[in-house]
Length: 243
Image 1 (cartoon, one colour):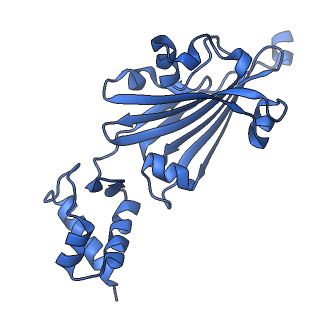
Image 2 (cartoon, helix red, strand yellow; image 1 turned 90 degrees about the horizontal axis):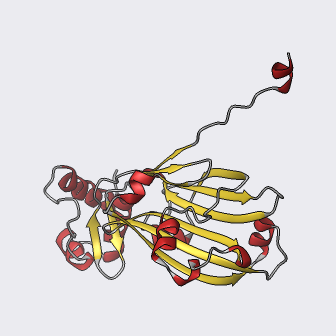
């Protein structure tokens, strides 16, 4: 026997999928919906949580519950990671950037191989299409290696950060670790996703020819809004070349 909140979710889902409630449209207030269905707001929020978990609805803090527009996927290009240039250049996709100087904590000390407390340039980037966030990037560079003007929000530098590729000179080596995992509470809030919806997390570490780590980037994308493309490098066996 189905519970009341599932009945409500079924009814709202039917209205959404049949077009009675349009993508981007704001749902009635939670109090109004609870009154309409003759249930408590707790039951009503459980019904909305079902739709949020399915990606049909999203709650925007301070604004209410909305029918989600079908997500448009963006492309992350691995190897020297960045958003696909065509994607990043689209006017519909905007990236907000917040920069600051921070001290290396235990995790960043391990990633960047620097002493605890070392000064780092931090760039927190969030990409949006309209009201819908597409990705979150936290990029860290040893403070002495941060490109000139990067922390001052110069337009040319901000454009580089907007593609999640900060270094102006390609590094000698890049290592990317990719995993799917549940989002953290902060990621749920920033990316407006559901706590049960998996995210694609990419940890990117770049080194120079001497082996020094010159950048560490922690990238997070909702799983339904990203395609990641990685191109393998051809490795020639020395024994074959000598034969």
